[in-house]
Image (cartoon, rainbow, N blue to C red; front, side):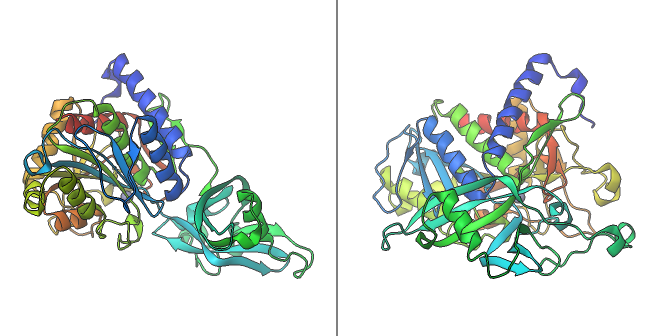
Length: 446
Ligand code: ZN
């Protein structure tokens, strides 16, 4: 059924716009997974959440507000319930902080024909053509050794159009509009940083650029994780601002939704221990120390249970009475590619959150967990849509199945409908975001 925005009452519209405006600010503050995690941490601290160091014993109390951060990216925020997990269970929403992008090689500087460029690798599966001819900044993490012995991280963000990746002219690629833009990321994506007169005249220009951004000496930078990002700010779109446009809606929009919902519900008395999990590494398969295939969530859940008085038996009891909502965006029907959607399961922008199902279990959803989320949406009085792939096309995947198999808990895969997934600039529905926050808030209020 098509969403009827015209019939949406004015109060809901104003709330949805306000929520989406906050999402846009969140996206602009988060040009990399590192910045996304830092933005989440800042918001959690503002809401009274206290950092716990994984290297220390957990000292936590029912009703307290806590978070941990692993390797500067993945974050878990949690609120212990009024009952120990063995009887109260865990209620989790999990999303991911990383998005497809172009990542710098360790020895990034490359010189060719009077130009200094930056060597890039693909992080995940970006739509490469969308990165051409954009104004690109540079951001991420430097690892510094100010005194030559200790190591520390510092986030940097060069927020000016220092880099661009020019397309081949039409005259050099005559069939581009008939055959599509095919790009070799090693040879044809050439991010240009600067012009030089003599190749020997600009020693270590890139190192000096990073050093000035971090206000350190170049030799103090021992490592980095840096990515390119689009400088165009996130924005509303559509005549009635019924759409949002930005890079990284997949999946920072779900990070924003989960953190906003947890903060909104934090004062509700709940027997369950509530957690919002923000994984890194989803776009590259999750097999990292802080991804969904790591010990991150099992270890933190067990430590919470033990700190709240349960033993290992109690921790395993808790898993059996817990629920995981895996939140990652879904494909909306694209009017130009209608045949790519399953006719009876084609979500529409602003039609509400989407429950994703796959017979081969690329998604963790089953009939029971779908019913749980459907009930949440009804309780929040928001619409809900269903997605399955066409039977003749393969499925995407997300963290739900991995986390579900590791934890053995009831799991549903959901997400908001969006267009242009993995483009440098994606498109979603203003109202969907509000609806998702409402549904997650009901979940966290129970
Ligand atoms: Zn995703």
